[in-house]
Image (cartoon, rainbow over all chains, first blue to last red; front, side, top):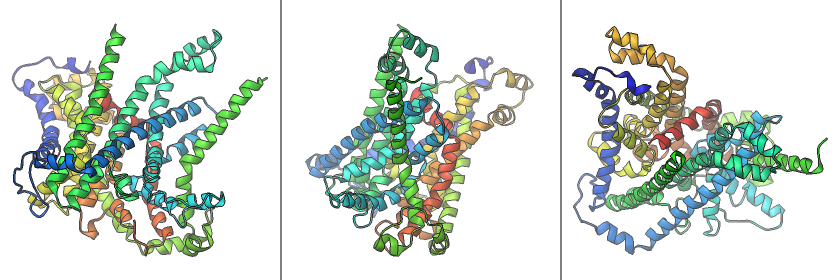
Length: 301
Length: 278
């Protein structure tokens, strides 16, 4: 009904909506989209931090340096690996958790609250607690592995484990969100359909595949999109846990951008990293959009 | 009677739930337990795994040596300022999208969706340059202005969703009586969607509360640091006892945990709406 409300379409009335929409849009132009286009331009300049408003135009110079730099490929690889693994593991765990607590049981409210802890704890606080748990000398993980007789591990400083360790913290944060999204969808699965399938002799797994899964698939897909986008965006826990190290094994594009800009003082070069990050984020959004469109079409047929 | 098969399934399910609870809950438990250890235990005899409440006074003394009060106060200013701004602008945008058809409506939807996709780090450098020009670097105002770009759209999605559910008839008579549309919004619509306003406020507030990237880049002055930056400064620094570090982290986390658990469904609705309707 919302839009039908407007009957008088003449004169002032035509301008009325803009009185509401312009202030927020001007705000976003100034503090989001103008900086964003500025950053695209900056990636074509040799801007340095000593004088950030004066950079010389150097065309594709930064990008040429980028494609010759092994560190860039390392960063791209870290970003993609991190994003894909976060989505796969985070979504899988989130769905499993949602299915596990979907049906009522005693203490469900408490369990549900505890399962959300990772999502609710601020990133910086999460980093501090996991840093302590990963601590090589006194952390709980190495105390356990020592008790088990398999020795100590360099959780965050060895190229073998660093990405996995960062991933564990990330999954702890995102899986609960996936769980909430899927739980909401599960609650709208018509109970009669599930019952009917069971009476027809379908076992648990085939009921799940025939009835439940199609119903929650859009939600899983949406959660996967958001988790992917957040993985490309994430800065705090990666930066605080490993600082992008060791040897660049966790230096995602966003971490690399911030380091190139404020430790390497090369703002133009940092902006080039940003442009690649933007391309990646847009790609994820485009994939989501296409899949969504195709489903809409299928449903209307 | 339960068949052995169903009994086994039930056992499996409870084992799974138990495992998930341990995985999800342990870090927070460990944060609290560590805060109640003393240094000699943490680095010497070994950490005690249960919370030793008798060490609470020690923790309070240790926290006295950390400027956590100052940090939380700055965090509070940043989060509240951002909330007021993003609710005000979000309500305007939400009302326009909910009640009017206008040229550029699709573009507005697309731009709002974009803000949820673009990594914050992408505007870090240009904002830095802009803030130098306008004297907003090293200022809480600048930080608030940067944060709101990302929380405003979420507030808008939440509020638009709530306004869509308010029947037009409710405001119709006021409009016929020539009541200004802005008053219709503030006097009629907003009071009807208070729960959603509260939800949007909590989302915006904790976006500002948790924010780290902008704050750690734009604020050089230690006196301006919010808790996220202050706590992060403990990383790689060994003078502060770990019990105090995690005690402070716990104090910083508790409000977020409480509010996230209280309005979890609304937060999820707000975060997903932008991606669906974009």
